[in-house]
Length: 216
Image 1 (cartoon, helix red, strand yellow):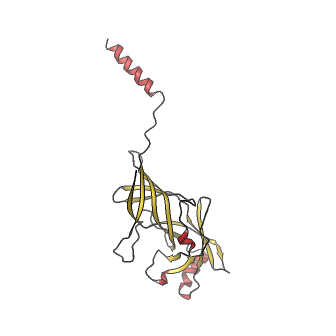
Image 2 (tube, one colour):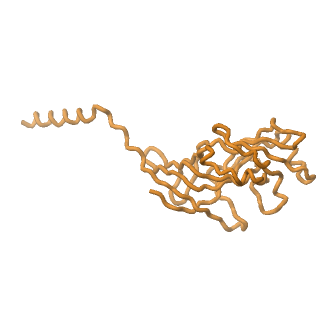
Image 3 (spheres, one colour):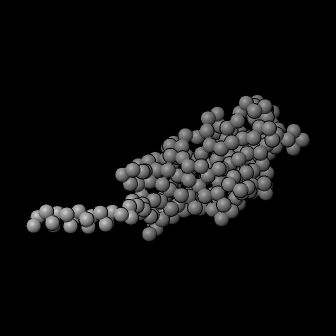
């Protein structure tokens, strides 16, 4: 069973490879996803575990490869928030990782931030993405729900002081008090029933036979 829902934009922390800085090209490499499990929260369904499929089929790379922005802490209200961009064509899936090359700004106004990135002082980055389809396994008495994202679209990468809190994933839109939601197809699956011991049925029959004999 599947249904169409509205979800906000998402963010999650990833790694910046300071040692990859290329002084001639003024570029640096980033890992924008590992697909690792993170805990999130929905006001409708409560807590759940989100994982990202990291395959060429699951990740829509067009926005990144068209030169998506490299932002200062996910801020996108002013052109000065842009401190670089993804080098077109460099975003790709490398095994279980999503990687890209970032062209850093050479503007004087960005020199302090870019210098800290170059020196390895700013080491954290965070990716913003849209979720288009998930497979949700409902919660049980022993485990919270899980959502495996099977279709998603990164649209920006940001330098951040602290990677985005996995539970605080709602991004603001063009107006601070307005949240933008995007369509997402959610397929729901029931949790697998608990495994039954092979001898359980035989043991139950023996107990019934014993009660029957004792009652005679």
